[in-house]
Image 1 (cartoon, rainbow, N blue to C red):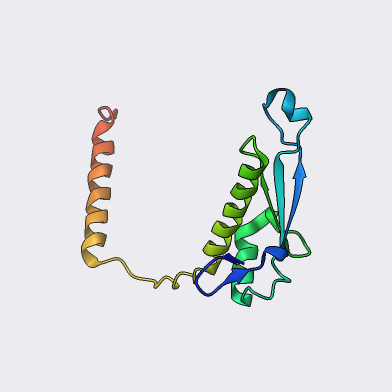
Image 2 (cartoon, helix red, strand yellow):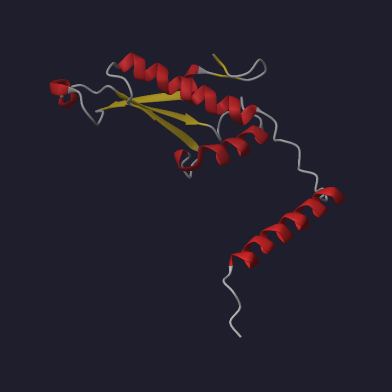
Length: 140
């Protein structure tokens, strides 16, 4: 079990890993070894995630979530397969922890104070005066 929060954990069997060739520099090994990791997690089918968390996860994942509700995380930062595998798992855990957080409370609309309105209007008047004095002499 992979512990996401104290109350939420996902089973190792829910994760599917595929290895592919990484792009970028790597010398001769880049064409021979499959070190990049593509981690797939069927988030919408997971019985361990609450429905509210699934909805937040869809919003957070963006293009990484497929139409079928499968979250795809790719890691090719490191040159070793095990390091990329661990990096992909850390990315998944970080995303799930962010989705587990409750949404922020809604913003309460407030009105500007009387003093702030007065300061804003005085600043506008000063700025207008500066611009008016910047002009040349009146030609009649």
